[in-house]
Every structure is written in C-alpha cells, then in structure tokens.
Image (cartoon, rainbow, N blue to C red; front, side, top):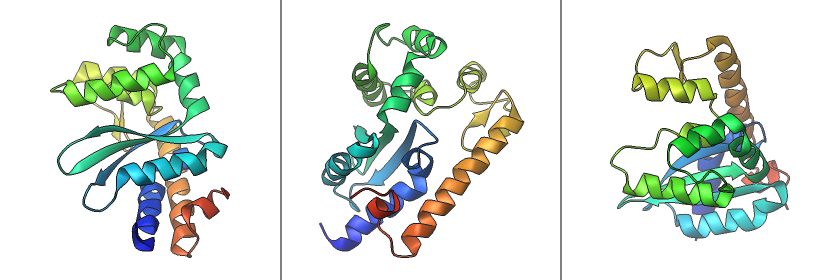
Length: 190
C-alpha cells in the first residue's frame, strides 16, 4: 500500500464521514472503489488506530467494483439502537428485539447483501431523525419537505442546522488534510 493510497483513503473518509469522525454523528456510509483501495487493509488499519477514540469501520457489503463501508462511533450507535422507538422500528423490520450492536450490524449487512431493495431502516443506523426514516419509507422517498444529507419529512429548520454542522465538520477535516495533516493527526490519534 503506497503513501498516496493511504492519503487518499484518509481524504475519502474525511469527505464522507467527517461528522462521525469528529463525534457529532453516530455513523456514516462510505462507498469505495475496489480498484482504488485495498479496503480490507485500510479498514483493519483504521480500526486498530481509531479504536482509542471509539471509532470503528465495518464492511457492510461488497460487489464487483465497490465496497460499502460503515464508519461509526460505537457508543453513539449503540445508544441510538437502544432507543425504544428505534428498537421498535428495527424489530418490525426483522431485527432481533434484544440484539446488541454487533448483531444489528450483522443483520443490516445481510439485508443489504440479500435484499433486492436497499434496507431503508439504515437511516436509523446513520442517525437520521426517526420521523424522517418513517416518512421516507411511508412515502417511498417522495413528498419530502427538504432534501440534503437525507430526505426530511419532519422539521426542515432542525435539519438545515444539522446539515450546516455536518458541512462545517467536512470543511474543517478536509481543510486539515489539504494543509498536509494526515487523518490520524487531524483526529489527534497517535
């Protein structure tokens, strides 16, 4: 693995997972090209270094050309999945009622790999407001009030603020990397 590939992987994560990396979001999904990265090696390296900050990554699915990587904060995502309303919705989608984070991630991965339709409950894992996840499912992705990082069916004002905060994270982290800092230095991970 060359230095350029290592740097490009960090830039990809900064661009697509900055809110999670900086601690204001429980998880982000990153689609990576298999021809551009050895995602398995990078994911394992990330996990070994970033675990001290409660960060993890997990390959959710793999097709011929791309890999879908979930970057998450273990405590935040566990808390999100423990929320009674989120748990009720996940149980209705076929997740075990008492499943822990690892079990839920395994079920999500299986649903992505085997299902003809993308499992829209993934919005719960990504920290989207439950009313927006429900709204998306019930409206089949139509009739939304605002479209940004996700389709908003609830409060557009709150979503706009959240979108702006996510953009600030992205600008900050990508700015650090553009100055020559690597991802781990930017996150203060030795």
